[in-house]
Length: 124
Image (cartoon, rainbow, N blue to C red):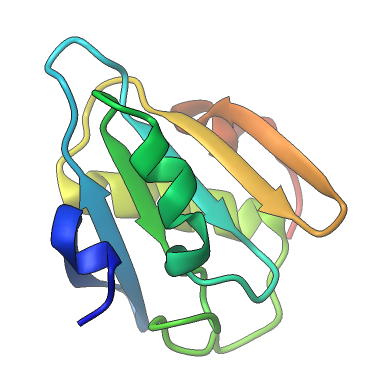
C-alpha cells in the first residue's frame, strides 16, 4: 500500500476516455480546498509530503494524463485542455465552490483559482 493511502482517500475517476488517479486529504470545513498537480512525470506520491504538511487544509492531488496511475492521453495536450479537464474533474468530485489550484509544469508554476482556469486560457 502506498504511504499516500494512509491519510488520503484514493480513487479513479473517468472523464470521457481519460482515467485519472485522484487522492483527497480532507481538511477543515472553513478552508478553501487546494488542488495540486505536477505536469511533467511526477505522480501524486511526490506531492504527498507537501500536502501532508498543510494541516487542516483539504488537498486534492491527481496524476495528470500519462503519469502515475492515470491513463495515457489520446493526444498531446496543452494547458487549455488540462484546465478544462481539471474543471471537469472538480465537478465529478462534487466541488462546486471556490478551489485554489497550484500547478507545477516544467520550469515554472501556475497558481490560480481552478474555476477560472478554463475561461482564462485560450487555444488548444
